[in-house]
Image (cartoon, rainbow, N blue to C red; front, side, top):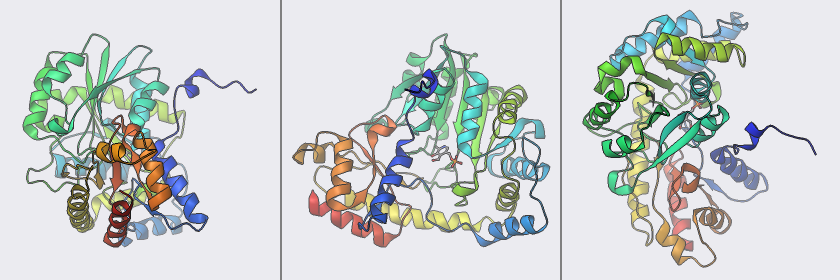
Amino acid sequence: DIKLSARVQRIKPSPTLAVTALANELKAQGKDIIGLGAGEPDFDTPDHIKAAAIKAIQDGFTKYTAVDGTPGLKQAIITKFIRDNRLDYGPDQVLVSCGGKQSFYNLAQALLDSGDEVLIPAPYWVSYPDMVLLADGKPVIMDTTIDQQFKITPEQLEASLNHNTRLLVLNSPSNPTGMAYTKAELEALGAVLRAHPQVLIATDDMYEHILWRDEPFSNLVNACPDLYERTIVLNGVSKAYSMTGWRIGYAAGPEPIIKAMKKIQSQSTSNPTSIAQVAAQAALDGDQSCIGEMLQAFKTRHDYLVDELNRIDGISCLPGQGTFYAFPDMTGLIERIEGVNDDIGLAEFLLDKAGVAMVPGSAFGSPGNMRLSFATSLDNLQEAVKRIKSVS
Ligand code: PLP
């Protein structure tokens, strides 16, 4: 028997990637599967972004870059923060990493010691708790319900804070719920945080641009500028520009934290891929109309899917405000279908009997729900709805 570290035994493989892999495997076996598991836009990366990367290869821009990103990309990120978020950062306050995932990983590694608590609202992006565990930290889950639109309240935050709390993670718009905090809600959370100066805040703005509610996007620093020195903003090009495979994310925040994250990165991956950085720069500096086109498509599909799901007995779905996920409560369906006892069983049942793949809510800390990605064509969604109806 090979002995593995306690660290690796503490965590599990990403369940969302596992569902996608299983659906792909069944497809490869010739089964007719509709995948609603994917966490990535179904659109192609826009041509002007690809062209920039092709040119970078032809120009020989294929060597190591600075660990924390090329000066050109860092400047594009700084400009983006001013343009989209009215936030000012200097070059030493920005770190480019291999996807948003590595940004959060670096942050956890740079901040946490054994026993440090990290507050994570549930439903959560699957990777936060495991990355906290890998860094020896302790994830503290704050459960939310559909009645609170899956958002934590100031009272809940207050009740979860203690002298071990090191970090609060906010993800808005949220994967998996599609809900976003209003500026007023963030102000109220900020009022609680002000009384706990040892707590830092990570705001994961990955879905910032995939938002269709009337109120424009705000993050915690927009709502509470005085928390600038305690907040790390995480973002990336994966979702906004359909660039998941390019692996570029970025973080901005207080210089000592960014510097520590850079040190971690310098001893793990070093710089993100040179040509992907050129592509990300083209994405941030270039024409932004591709974002609006994708948003329009996501909104149309969202409206269709949520409406149809709510027509099925045993399914109840809160309309989302952004992202490309629906997160319906399916406890009624679970109770009704013989042999199905929980959301994991339901996911297996729907994959097997209906050929529709989705991710069980327990992966996001919310058993009884299911995450359906509508980053797929309307035709696929119509077929998926038909199939779910036929077995439910
Ligand atoms: N943050 C959230 C909330 C996400 O949903 C994802 C991707 O699923 C990421 C971060 C990481 O994105 P990336 O592909 O850039 O690592």
